[in-house]
Image (cartoon, rainbow, N blue to C red):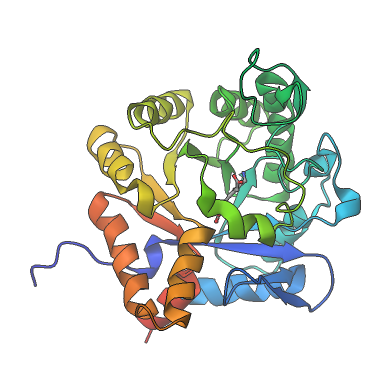
Length: 321
Ligand code: PBG
């Protein structure tokens, strides 16, 4: 009667991984219970999620190696995996929101979220490759084209996860100019350079070839005030919803954001958070089921409107009895 927060299926966005092929699934070794699915299987997964009351799926591709390149052109292909999956879910008439990431890491041979250009701090840590950095403005140009490509395929929500400066405003203007005012933007507004993304990089096949790290554009885990600036900027540029990522190690950021802004606020309980709970439970060290509910409840308590979580189908099944 006095409980302040509840988890409902409508709080959840389910991230799923797609691969080439027909009627195939592949386990993600570092994420028990998570599979990469061919497009036809992803359609069935989306149908199940919709029937359970989950309002949206976020689709990520495991791009075949021969379609990855230095500049990530596959992101612009109208027939790439995520575009095909989006169209297939739409054509099946399934009533579920489709969110697609805006970033190049599933498409580049170097695994970075943007394109590499000469630059870097003299004698400093560039975080990338030799004398190259991820070029902010050059990346924004291609991310705009990726956004338009994904909107044309039928995405309802675009999630720029690249952390380039100025991309939210640029993407919003480009969408509006093409008559796509209805496509929403959920910005990965405060996205940290985190070790907790490890299992995801295995899932999308970017773990082996990522050069350097992403600290040149993702946030320093030591910074909190900067997160408030990043979120304010993205809302100002036209983000409809904002996200903090990862989740559990950054509950303080979520709580500050909830107190400071009125925009819908989401947390991404990332792959490493999911895997840690599973690994400890598999060893009998914690009760995995209870840890799942407790972690999700913490996000609501901190002030989230919703949560991206790999637990979504399990949670929704429990809630549906
Ligand atoms: C890509 C992207 C990442 C995640 C979502 N989009 C990984 C990264 O930035 O390296 C991570 C999600 C997870 O760990 O579950 N820009």
